[in-house]
Amino acid sequence: QVELVESGGGSVQAGGSLNVSCVASSSWWCMGWFRQAPGKEREEVASIGIGRGTQYGDSVKGRFTISLDNARKTWVLQMDSLNPDDTAMYYCAAGPYRTGRCSFTSWGQGTQVTVSS
Image 1 (tube, helix red, strand yellow):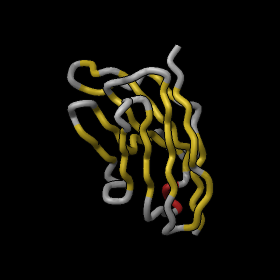
Image 2 (tube, rainbow, N blue to C red):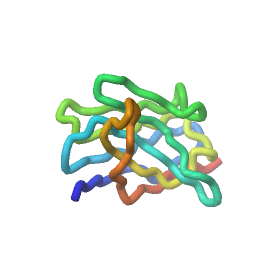
Image 3 (cartoon, helix red, strand yellow):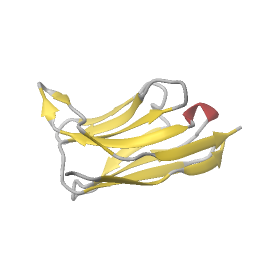
């Protein structure tokens, strides 16, 4: 059973920064961050694929940065210029490539990010 453990998050005022980290028990080809706010659908925030680079959701482009350490078992989402719309539970995810796309099959428990105005 693969484990993903998130850390970080918390509360910050609008305009501030936070980061969330994920440590996996094994290496993956695709790693990412998703978020879900109450009453809203889950949204892909950022992902990184080995040999494919990074991708970001439109709402976070230019503000969030995903990075991966050399061991390929820890990835970090740096969140800058946060606004209240970024408030959500953030989940890390990982998985293999399938048919040329990332397939996220393992999920963390989630960590809360709250941005106040």
